[in-house]
Length: 340
Image (cartoon, rainbow, N blue to C red; front, top):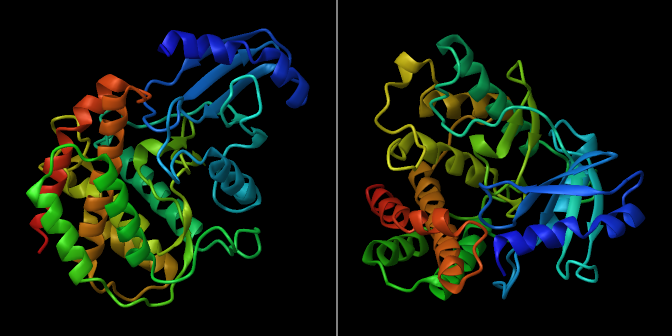
């Protein structure tokens, strides 16, 4: 199915949305957000206002992937907490005119920063953006999961062992050309798995700068987006994934901070960012930091490999971008190998 045909399908949902979304008034104009890789996301403009629709992609899906119902559930549960999320409006199961699961949420006007160096801001404004991101991450990990009805949102047991097993399976199901660095990384992670310390929080799973909407004129975080990978797990997985950004190269479309003069740019370094997070959560120090970083590199490589495979199979949300991601996988694997 072409992208244009998919847009036409979304536009044709007007009568369905009028019946299920309070106050919704067709007609509908549709524009697809071009950055999403996993679950295609659309900006809807109707007579009643603006909305965002996020759907499963068409075609055959990997097991446990593209669970937009989980995204809907977690954001709805966080609606009354200190973690900013868009208001959830409607969740549709696959029995709808689109033929696949989707949800509708509020459209928020704000800023999304795609370059972590924040070139569009003055030097004096940049540190506050990172502090807002840090504060929001700590707030997420401080959420009482039982109080918000998410006690069953993940399985008990060693999070890193379970997640490593999951992403090894998904990577091997998606890979087309084996990479020795990835295979070496998998072996190292499995051999150096830390003991389970019993810490469990809600984790986002893809916590990074461009998955956040900031206020138009301040460093306030209006919303954290893209919760597809959220679960109950270990908070250091989110922190390490976030801190990959300090290590990834800034060039070649990887949008990292590696090689930049962060002090000159007015940005915190990795140690400062980690220290601020630890202070907010009452943590003295982090053991096995290199393991958590290596895990983060592998997990991202496995995610990107899935995107590349979907592009190969004709099911990627953004095929051109997906093909570019193939070049990042060996970079991620090589950087992870440098940690051990």
